Amino acid sequence: MKKVIMRQYWRLQQSQTVISMVFWTTTLTLLIWPYVRWRFESTCDSGLCFSNEILGLPSTYIGLMSIGLLVLLTVLLIGYIYDVGLGLWKEHLTISTERNPFGVYLISPPMGLILAQTNMLLKKIAEDDEDVQRHVAFVERWLEWNADEEIWARAMDSWKNSMGDEDPYLPFLSEKTRENLVERSSTLPKE
Image (tube, rainbow, N blue to C red; front, side, top):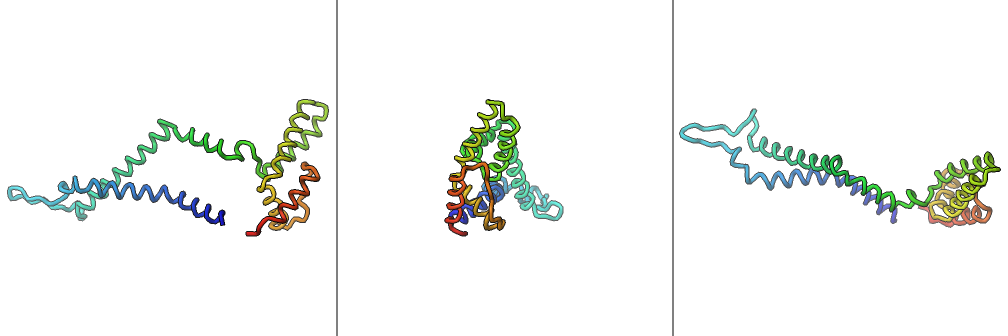
């Protein structure tokens, strides 16, 4: 249920940019229009009458479209200045990355498999190098620790049920961790 709600929330966020741009343009255009409307109305002065049409379109439409375009360009200019001039989004991305556990300390299962494979090769290639072996031991502990996360149990469940693989063997994990992972994956609620 939580996943369905989050998906809908994500969809709302994605459409928010376009919808807010339309609302900004429409709202500001209609707020500005009463102040400039008189410039687009037909006038008669000293017997001379001026039409309120431009290229066959009522000047009201031209006025509204002009204001709308001006508002849209202003909002885009502010966005450009925010992006290029101020660059505030860089700090926002840094904070977002820091808050994302997979950007800091957690390992996703596919990335973990690649890391484990590289680590196993490194372990065999540099058996005599203490620094390399120390690093290999750290990565093994890190993978072991990550295997206790729910996402790894979900990945194991997917490897077994979605892919139909009977034995997704993970040799970089201890026997106890591997058994625990298989057990936890079998107890996950099915969606």
